[in-house]
Image (cartoon, rainbow, N blue to C red; front, side, top):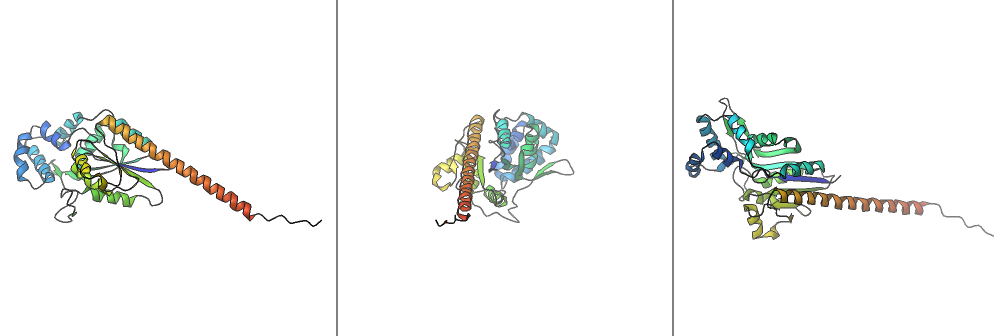
Length: 274
């Protein structure tokens, strides 16, 4: 069995929007967001503060979940995810959004069951029924030390953990899809035989284009959901086809070796004197 791990970013990759901005705009807090933006140390802290302010305005968890029902997603994304899963791929998410947003949207789209793992900023609903957002990496306790990534999350470290957790007995290929600048670090962690799919015209694409030789994986840009589906499924089928061919050739070679060895081990015929 060919092992293929497909890792998706979430915002502007699976969904065609940024889930944080969607909540702020749809709940009428854009002006407040713009006022708070320059006063907060990082985006993660800003979103936690925004959710506090929205709660104070009477906005509930149910209100947030409800607006996600109309978040935009390209019509070919869900079929692409289901098809990749049906082909035997291990699908995972690595995102700088948060658990509540991602889980809520995936459940609404009926896609949650297709992902074996979601790596994102943790969230919880406190005793006041307020949604709280916490950093994936606590920069005060355990800073990740990566200069390419925001203090709350280094996606490159997550990719390294996934790579290390994969079975050593089975050859694994990784396909990584993303759009933002935070997707550049994990792209650098991919190796020969892997594939990276940066969204063309987005920050990760611009960063890769500055020096594509730094990327060991094959680069396949995509524009929209239709493009994503075509390229992703094409890569998966190509990997499967190549590996099945290699396995067939290897099996044939083993059979030939066994046949020759068996022939050489047979007792030689005795010569009969006339």
